[in-house]
Length: 312
Ligand code: A3P
Image (cartoon, rainbow, N blue to C red; front, side, top):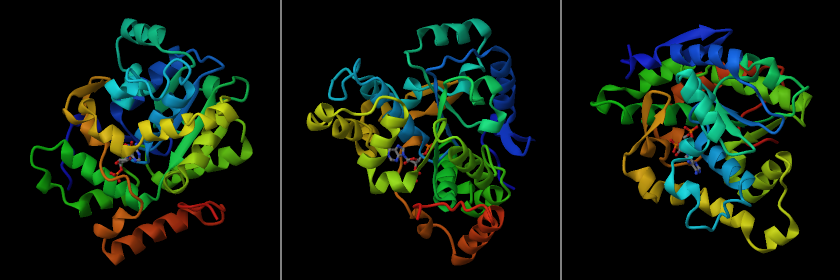
C-alpha cells in the first residue's frame, strides 16, 4: 500500500469527502470564526486541477489597479501564488492571533483558496444572502491523477518507491485530497447552473484552449470586467503572460525550492509547476487503467448532464 509522505496527509471521510485530518480541524475553526465580507471571493478546487493558475489569474485581475501586471514589483513576481492567495484551511490552522493578523493584513477584495466543497463551507459563505462569489476549476480526472503522482513524488526522499498504480488506485477509490474528484466537480457544476451569479464553473482544458475568453469570463463574474481601453492597452494579455506556466515556473522564487508555509505544512514552491498540459495521462496510463477510471466517472455522472473536458 502506498506510503503516504506525511502524517498530515492521512485522510478521513467527512460527509462524503476525503480530507487530511488537519484540514477538517481547520474547517471547524473557520466555521466558528470566519466572518465573510460581501466582496470575498473563494476559489474552489480539488488539488491538481489548476488551482495555482486560477489563484494567479484571479489575484492579478482583481488587484490590477494597485498592481499593474507589467510592473516589476508585481507580487506574483516575488511570491508564490499560494502566498498571494491563501488557503482558508492554512489560515485557520494557525493560532487565533496569527489568523487574525493574516486577515487584517489581507488585501481587499479578499481572495481565498479552498478545497472544501460548497456543501461543507459555512452557510455564511455558501448562502445566497452574502455577496461572496465562488469560482470553481475542474480538469480531466485522468490528468489530475497523473499530476497528483508527480506532486507526491516531489515530497518523497525516494520518489521511485511510489508507483503510479498505487496513486491511481487511491484516486479511483476517491481517497486523494477532497475526493471523490467527480463528486466534488459535479456538486459545483450543478451549483453553477442553479446559481450562475454565485458560482462560476471553469474548465482547465477550456482555459488552455482559449485563455482570453476565460479570463474575460472570470473578470466579468468577479465584477471587474476589462474595459475596452484596458483591452487595447494589452492589460488582459499582460495578465495572461504574467500568470503563464512558463513565466511563473522560471521565476527564482518558484524555482529556488524556498518553502512557503501552508499552515504548518511546508510546501515547495516548484512542486506546483510541471507540464500544464491536457492529455498527459496517455504517457502514464495503460488503456485498461484509462477505461477503468472512465467507467467510474461515467457511472458517477450518469444522468446528470455533466461531463469533464471541453463543454460541448
Ligand atoms: P501538471 O502536473 O499536469 O503539469 P494545482 O495548482 O491545482 O495544484 O495544479 C497543478 C497543475 O497545474 C500542474 O499540472 C501544474 O503544472 C499546472 N499549473 C500550475 N501553474 C499553471 C499555470 N500558470 N498555467 C497552467 N497550468 C499550471
